[in-house]
Length: 211
Image (cartoon, rainbow, N blue to C red):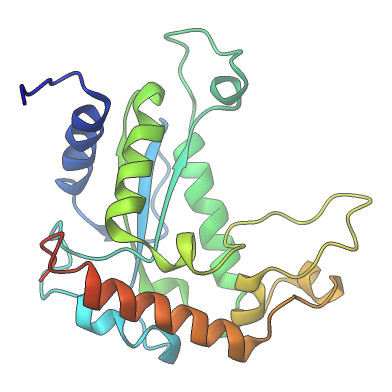
């Protein structure tokens, strides 16, 4: 098959490789401008993520380091199709990371100092491609096994919204206390997370060259 550098998958790999070449930094990060993709890495001792120890490498700046969450941020205008080409996105990526840091700081069983971050500023048109490929490759637990990381305070009229899975595992958000009981218990969610991480380690690590 002829290699096509403009094939969607090849374009995604190109952006993803550029992302993985970026250094991992302390979290939270200092203010900067731009849109792009980011990954959060957990280095703490929470027992729920013990299996992550298997996936860590001595050098956390390595592209082989396994993230716990991968996300993206583009300007609101870009999401709604109202942004003109060439208009600067502003500090949207920084703002998203700041919100995540604030969220983690509220949790009783997480410490923001146990997190590291990797990010890349890219043209907004490439952001969804890179994010999709990276999530598929690394299957981050907070993307695929637990729902609710990064959710905002429910708006008016949504008081009956159920507590997110993430808030069940990591309590601390004041608004979550007043939400309806989650569908799954903490015990069920812990099993769900452990199965996901174990499956990633046993079935995918060698396949993607992470060990």
